[in-house]
Length: 94
Image (cartoon, rainbow, N blue to C red; front, side, top):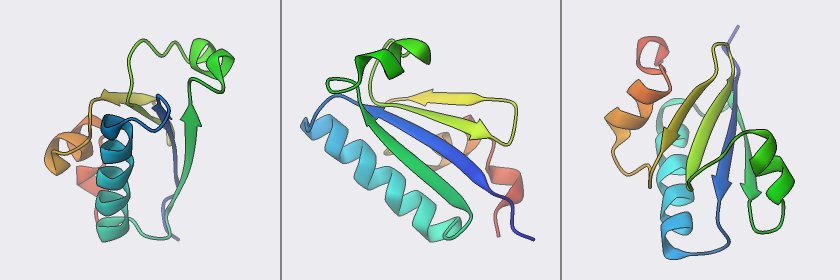
């Protein structure tokens, strides 16, 4: 059975940095984790309470909710290895 990853990506509107982070993340996930993740994208401009609830101080911020423990990475997500290491996904790649 495939491991399921639950991720949240907090962005600020449709800024170039936000767009780049989403594109970079989808590329990383679709290359190695297709079908084993769910991604919720949250715009902090439209949903500031959600950002406050998750203690988001900067965007873009990616959070791995499941499996525990929770892991976070901040930035444009352009460095694949940094993203995979930061989210502790390297050891379970297919």
